[in-house]
Amino acid sequence: MSLFTVEAGRRAYSAEFQGDVTLGCRFRPGTPTGGPRPTVTWHRLSPTFLEVYRLDSGVENLASQDPGYRGRVRFLAEELDQGWAKVQVGGLRINDSGTYRCFVQMGTADYKTMTLSVYAPYKPVTKRIQRSAEGDEVELLCQSEGFPASELAWRDGSARPLSSNTTASTTPEQLVRVASSILVRSSVKNNYTCSLADGGPAARFNIPGTTGSSIPRYR
Image (cartoon, rainbow, N blue to C red; front, side, top):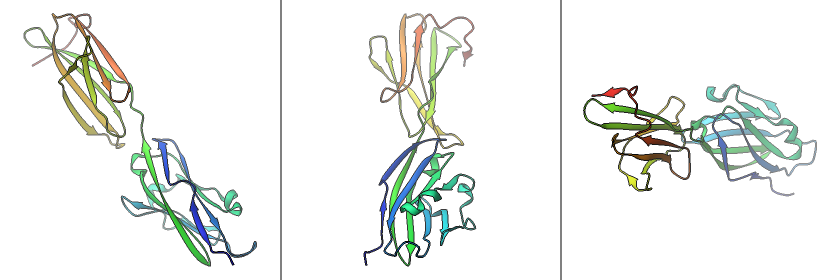
């Protein structure tokens, strides 16, 4: 009799925020066709232990499913007879990232683990200008959000890097909101680019062309 084994469909998955992903493992039963129906449980092991889905002897059992997964998980029952235990998780959240375990039991049992990383492409960079209360300084500000954490870099019209004041915060959706600003003289003709790392979204400021009287002052 061959050993009962479970194999991970993939060791690592990557999926987009608010999208969906199908996690799968393949099992090789050592019992003949028509034998006991499998029990399948999916758990997220880390960063916290949560039950994602349970199938007891071929019957769905959601009594102990974590509330955070309710209504978002579908078991692909049509692939069970082909030896696949797959769950589709929809409406992905950043905190769905972690290590998952697929456990299958048919008399004997086996399991495999895999990782899921949820990312969010950074949104277009928004920009804003504020004029100083006195003098000819203006503050150039830009902001974007996504996941994982990224940086905003500034360069002038000669592509020289500039020092900036940069902050990062977390949105209710667990995205990273990064904001950055620099001070420049409005009387000096130049342009400035604020861009995300790795060729992400960018915004361009033309000075003095974008420093009209409608720009709010700051103190």
